[in-house]
Amino acid sequence: MSNKVERITISVEAHLLAKFENYLSVNGYPTRSEAIKSLMRQALIEQEWQQDTDVAGTISLVYDHHKRGTMEKLVDVQHDFGNLIVCSQHVHLDHHNCMEVLVVRGRAAEILAILAKLKAVKGIKHSALMMATTGEDVE
Ligand code: NI
Image (cartoon, rainbow, N blue to C red):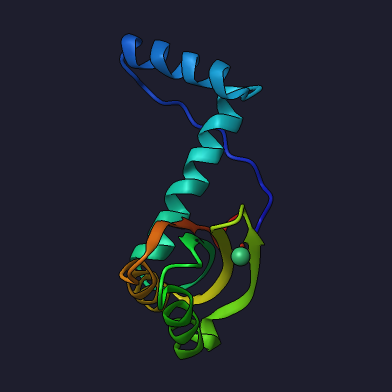
């Protein structure tokens, strides 16, 4: 991909621009260009997930390991989708609660399928997916 920079001009309502300027300042963007490029990349990553391409991400889970069957079921699901899980990390948050973070990579639909199975395990207190990218098609 070329690194040639194109200059664009956009028209935007004043009140929307004012809100966007505030967003830039709150989020620490140095320039409008950097903010808009960041939002463009985010849109392209969302499109990768919608188009079921090869993507990467993380799934985080919190559960009480004393709850009967929860940990065993989570391990079963992870073994069923072992080809998607790059690695996993287990953190003992306190006497009861565990956090697991799975780094996943594969087709978007497959990752959403494992997320659905993990979310449905009885005893899960929190589950979340962070949709990232392999970086191949995002500048
Ligand atoms: Ni633990």
